[in-house]
Length: 110
Image (cartoon, rainbow, N blue to C red; front, top):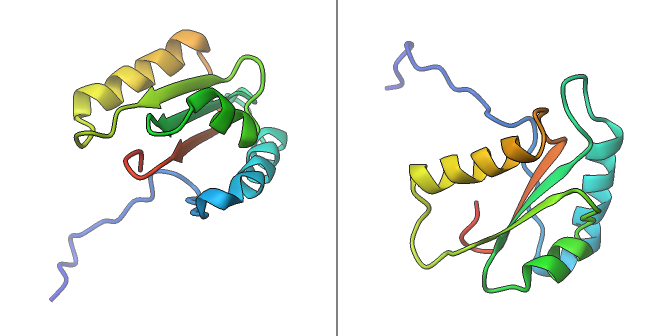
C-alpha cells in the first residue's frame, strides 16, 4: 500500500540517457538547453565525466564550450554528499547563476 503522505518531486526537469556512442545526441541536447536557458540561468554547462574517460575530449564531443565547467569524477566509490556539495560549490564559484544544463557521463556519475 502506498502512503497518501508520500510526495514525489522531480529534482531536474529532464533526464536523458544515451549510449556512449551517442555523444553527438548529447551535444544536440546541450545546444537545445543553452538556447532555452531561463531567466536566472546562464547558458553555461557543467560536465561531470567518469575519470575512466578523457574528460576534456569527451566533454568536447558532448558540446562543451569555452567557459563551461568540466569535472573529472572518480567512480571508484559511490559519490558522497560531501563530494556532490564540492561539485556544486565549484559550479557556483564559476558563475552565480544556475547552469542551463548539467551532464553526467559514465557509469558512476548518475
